[in-house]
Image (cartoon, rainbow, N blue to C red; front, side):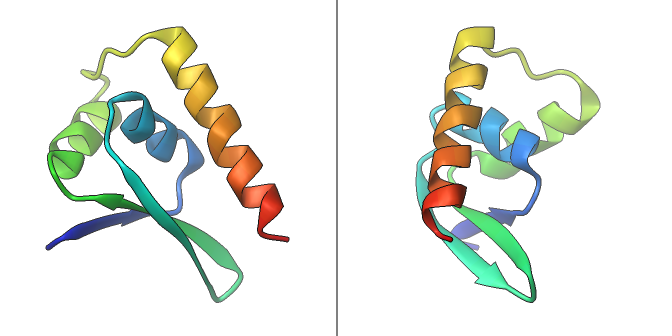
Length: 75
């Protein structure tokens, strides 16, 4: 798998804050998917969901703001 997709904003923020490159946003069936390079994305996602991921609060906040800006620019 060359890409990792998620529609969860917080998971996407954690990936972006962990320096995983956002490739694009895909819209399908009323949802927007964040598409990332798969390099370590699954590992980071698993750590996010289990509560083991540690990232800077500032980086996470900046990542969420960036993703929201991208989302609202799509409309």
